[in-house]
Length: 99
Image 1 (tube, rainbow, N blue to C red):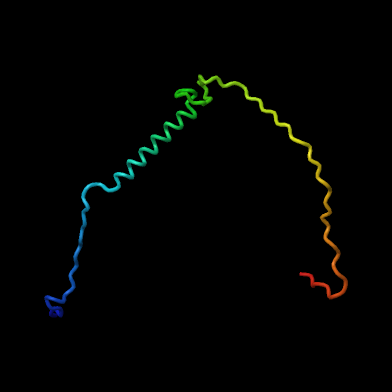
Image 2 (image 1 turned 120 degrees about the horizontal axis):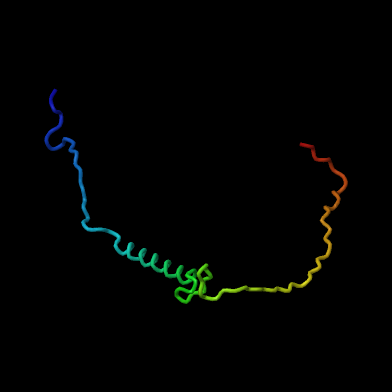
């Protein structure tokens, strides 16, 4: 059997590899690192037990801690009785069939 394709029209398989070079997304990793550092510093401030002047009350807290008593006086509210019965159906007409 002979080749039915000419040199100009025969199919050609071609693989193209594009190398952008270097790393991409460097600024994204930088911002993610800043966010992680900010979260760690915030957690130390909140839960560090006075480690950085925070108000944390951990087991080794040097911030003092102590008992906190809160008293809230609420007013007495009287709600009137409400009638929730449905009104009677109008007279006349055919009754609805039961399912």
